[in-house]
Image (cartoon, rainbow, N blue to C red; front, side, top):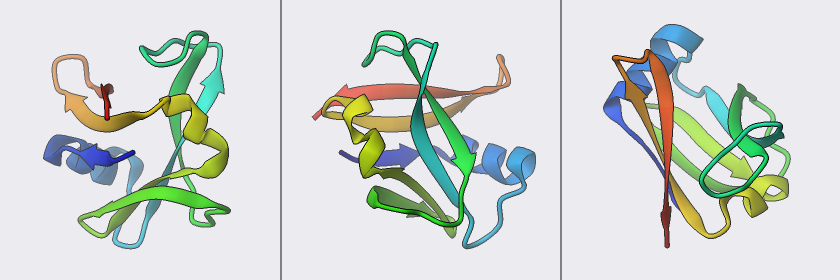
Length: 98
């Protein structure tokens, strides 16, 4: 699994979440949502500077984006792409099968 973050999404994380260098974003599954890869589950994120079992990560502009082993099942063999939609003023997640 790979994680990629667009430049627009990086800008959003820095401006809206207030992330700085050495910041960490954990992506995790949450129940009661929807996604193209898991029925009844959605993807969420949190600022988390204490990873427990980081298995997939990428660093962009000094910020680490990661998934822990407990949430790897959610992606079902898909890569994650995070972008920002200016019209809707929200993050967008897309999933690509490896």
